Length: 296
Image 1: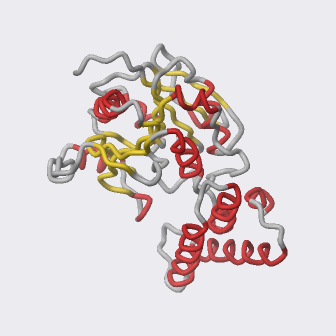
Image 2: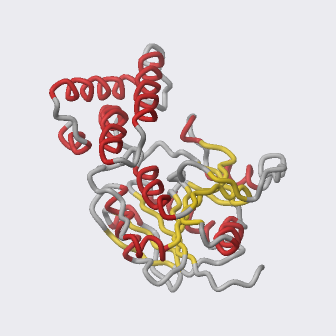
């Protein structure tokens, strides 16, 4: 291991899947570069059932919603150099933190980073924990292709993203709590705002599997509304370009429309399409806001 003084806090916001959370925490304790601590924030004590606080594990509670919970996690990382956010269903390669720290240490202009997702269950039916571990153990999947160690990217990906805490503190950047619940695009908003003060990069040797667990997610109607409302809100505030919003909204509506004819068993396409329609109707009425999903 390279010598470094950088300390790392792993931060996990979780809701409604304690068994997956326990497995992920167990695997995170196997990192070759040990974290200073793992901090878990849940909305209810039952969401962290089976976990016990220890020197390397802190359990916190906050209002339900990814931005709210992630802000609680930020408040518990003031004494660390890097905060690494993992989804509760993301299992990293055991050298993930090592390569992440090396990148931040080698380039002080990096403010935000994301790793390389070897497989993303969020784009399909999901990946079990056992399958994810088997994939990480398979060199044909957990490979080391001829990629640059670090490359500039547009934004971080919420399932695995790392930030320099000194920049967060210096500029007072927080997750936007107007994006409720699952908070579609809160990762882009946060990393893009922090990226105004440094580079956003992908660390290609920091790798992992996103299981894409289907439990504990926002219902289809609410998510469909957020697919339209959140990009528009972020464009109005200046963290998401309007051309990206038009492409994102158009692509998601088209996918929900096409797949609603023969929906995948693991996606509520018709619910999402209804949510898309409600958002479009609110645009015509001039009253679209992210918080509207709380009343749907």
